[in-house]
Length: 375
View (tube, rainbow, N blue to C red):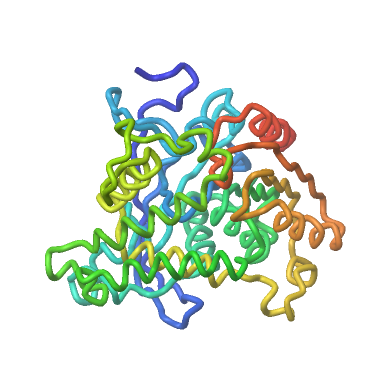
């Protein structure tokens, strides 16, 4: 069944690009394609387009379902739809699977047009800047000269921020949620442990596992289990699992005994069955490399001086991976440049995953800001 305020049945679309894309790392993609979905209608003035950028393991499927009996809705369905905070009666919303992804856009799983074989480990390392440049070409493809807003959480928030730097005249509003101006050393360390779990898996084969008909499943499982620990707060994990035993008694073994272990293994198995290892490596590297202040001697105020958009920055009190202090760094640098900035620090127990949750206070903040945008 579909809800009354659902965008309904949706279908992905593909945009093909034959003009070369220069990547920040020096390589060039001579041609590529992006998978995307749209919700709502582009108005006559083409002034109501909103791009939503996904986080590490996200994709283009933001809202709705692929069939009436589909049990899975888009990953931000609680936010996007008729009458929802990101109202598709007002906005033309676009979700994109980034370059290097594994949900249809050009990436390690896709075919290299030169070799006619999967790219695999030869697909270039991509950056947030590369993603934004590709997204801008999709905007051109859709006939959109200027975006009403760019929105993203976590890694998606970094993309929203980068939009205001790479294309300051093409974005009127940027909503940067549960994000940061760069990764801390601890966050980079988490990413490296996750990558090493994949790279040292015997079935990784230096990234050429497609040729062997295998998947580095063990490495992916560990990477995702580690990720889930960092996405949740200690309080959220305690409230959900505590020290509950799966079968009510200790068995003095190394099998699953605690509910937390069961949860982590389930999430790891699920992820390993649907996500590509080469993509995971590239997504985490893009996180590591993002640092707009690096070219300005670490001065974020100088880095953001080129921005012209209005900003909404949101953080969550229990998010220890992208803490409120990191969002405040962004806010200060924007205010230093006398830009229009609204900041909200939401009390929430879910940790970093709070930006995905249907929290009323959080959604009311989003709704209030988006309602102010004129289209």
